[in-house]
Length: 524
Image: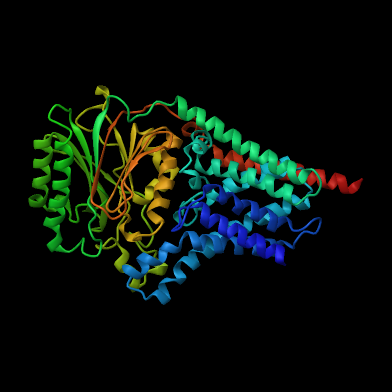
């Protein structure tokens, strides 16, 4: 019993400490989570827990850990949903309980591998593939909740992220989980293997670090030398009053002032620059407010800058809202626009079965949104033929999903632009968790990532996942960099459509092999 309690606590605390948290993040501790799940599934010595016992222990470990990671969910529910803390606090617990289901399934898979008396290499491979499929499933089921995959814990250590350019974020998570499982299997055994297997896992992690370090050393930075001057503007507007009509002029003036100051500092001899303002930075419908848009056009003409800004729009068919990014070109004319296609449950729409009055204030301050259809990369004043940038947009939550970023790259984007409004999260760990997940898109597809947010964290991220510069939280700020286009295709870009099916086929083949091997051993 005490051993079970130890591993439940170790796994939960490791997950909480390995992800961004209010105290101090130690990325390596995140590997305690899959390691603990293996130990909970395999039990002690030759005595295996019952199947439901393994599931229950893994679920409890995951539920506790994820509740700690997702504690911030209570903040928007309380601050903007107007629920008392007594009712807001159970929300991260309920979400943690859902996330714990995946921990329970992983522990069950570990128990099954142990029941087949699988060799360590086969068990670790099976568990690594299983982890990959569970993360992929979590990113798809119920419209997907791809927040903080295991690999996101290592965003502060970009050398360990380079495998994502081949395997993707989920595949890299599976690799980390397989190494952690190997160490956990070793700890369950006696003799030399108790030290040998964790040692092999440590060497595998070290090899990833050294290999990734060499990639970083050889990779040119898209923020060095010639390129397009890009300015990210973080307005730091109060979410509580953002949508009030009296704030519209003040909001426009805040962004105009910050943008002028940043562009004037670049000097008069520059080429056309790019300004990036956050998601819904303009809290009105730009198509129906020409008087409000006129100063933005004047800014673009006078300062010779293209402007990407978030705003709302109205769908002509449904009369419901669209979450849009508008492009105003350097001559003051309208460019293309982008419409968010993957919406946030409870943030932009409420699932019909859970359409409750207290959740409606969370809907971006305006109401229910519908998915958009205009998703092509934007054409700036300086064309791709002139070595200009072709931005592929990811609005807020979309930065969590590899398949959406892949679509932008497939359609010709040579840089990814993520505009977001993380003001909902308050001064919690969520903005950093969001950034760490978005960093993985840069590595997966070999594209620099430009991230502009309302209250932080805004950042320039290179195509290897290095955060070149970032803003603080809840400060008005601008960031500048010269950004060059990148057009090469990563291995993951080409493999991504086939990886889930290949992983599932490998799991089935391994299970068949291990089941037959176990049956032969029992018959001898």
